Image (cartoon, rainbow, N blue to C red; front, side):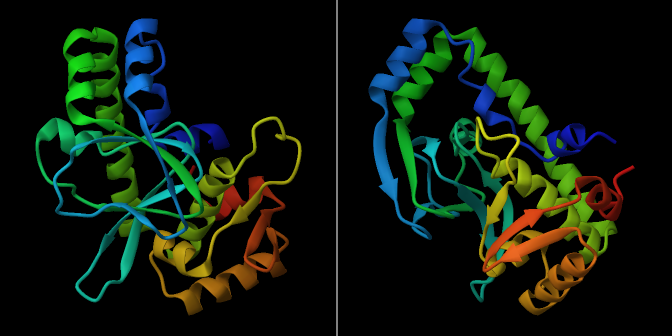
Amino acid sequence: MPTKYLIEKFDFKSNSVLQGLAPKDLSFLQSKMIQRKYKKEQRIFVEGSLPTGIYYLKSGKIKKYKADRDGKEQIIYICNNGELLGYSALLSEEPFADSAAALEDSIVAFIPKNDFLQVLSQSPVLSNGLLKNLSHEFGVLVNSIATFAHRSVRERLALALLILKDKYRVKGKENKPVEINLSREDLSSLVGTAVETLVRLLHDFKDEGLIETEGRRIRILDVKRLVKVANFY
């Protein structure tokens, strides 16, 4: 399976929602955006709270996660530049089903509910884009559930590294090594395992020549072999 196709099965693609909007609609939404800066670990919204608008990630990375009663996190998804957050809860008129927080210093634009719904009511392009993306996100969540249910921790880690490689790719520097800069705690939360198990597996991957590490930074050395480890054929 080509790596690009594999990644698409786990990517929300919400960065495509605003593409193709009529210039006047896009300009209107941009004029209503309230730009905010978030420090690393600062929360954007909390599970159970009611949405008052949607969020557009201009720069940085955001984690969407669920937390248990003890505060232990399970990262569901990592948002990249250009992606939208919170629109499914707004459209369903329900509380947020998860929480979101900055993985690194980020800039997020908030679009108030009434302004977003105004454009939605008059733009077939936006409504069709949201419908298409929500359908795709359902498939992504199904793939994620199946991955956790049927794959080993080693396979899940290999898949997570491949997805993160795409997330941390710098535009215009495609030929240079991608550095995944993520704490071991967040990576273990994404993979769904203990930090100790994660560290041991990263050491194994390093010994096998799949990756190299420098502090918390991870560089993938052999994509093809990592795809085989992920067992997505």
